[in-house]
Every structure is written in C-alpha cells, then in structure tokens.
Image 1 (cartoon, rainbow, N blue to C red):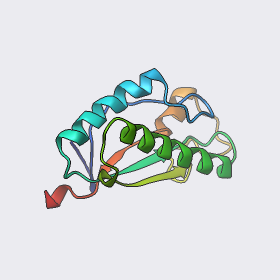
Image 2 (spheres, one colour):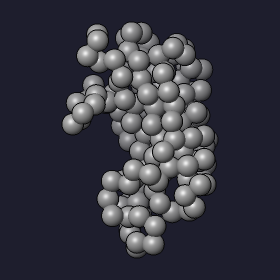
Image 3 (cartoon, one colour):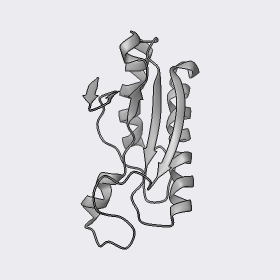
Length: 129
C-alpha cells in the first residue's frame, strides 16, 4: 500500500498498454497477477481502478480508450479470481488529469507523455479496515 496526498494506492509496478490498444499483454499480466494475489489475500479491500492516457489523439478517443482499458484490467483481475465486489469502480479519465505540461499541442518527449499514462488502484476503504 502506498500513501499519496489524499488517498491510498495499491503499490504496483508501472505498466503500459500498446498504443491505442486495450489488450492485456504478457508484461501487463505479470503486474496484474501480483495485484490479483494481493486482492485475494485481503478480500476486504475495495479498490477503484483508474485509467489515464496521455494527450496524443483526440480527447474523446482517449476517454473511450481509457474506459476500455480500465474495464480490461477489471475483467482480467476477476478472471484471476478477484471477487467482483472488490472492484467498486473501473473508470477511464482519458487525458483529463495530465500530471505534467504535455497537454494538447505541446511538444513532449515520449518519456514525458508516458508519465501521463497510468493505472492507479485506489484503495477506497483503507481507513475502515
């Protein structure tokens, strides 16, 4: 578990989807398998899966892509034995919460764009446990 300013996140390695894809690759599966094991060990944890994209591509396409990625992550975890009630929400935010200056029309290196693609698992009931 990782404490952030106003929320608690499940600690995991970073992973990235292929550009424009919602496919859970073997590399992503390795990270999600570890998260699934943690969620099965602590069945009272409740999480919200967030999916964020970078600003490349249209705003509406990124919103749709991020929602489908959040759902792909949720579905994968459930397929690995995580109880559906452990996942309260799977929400795509697209490019609505960019964490650096790489917004539409701003030139950025690929590594800076990658900082915006992220998939935090927010523990929503940490204080209740």
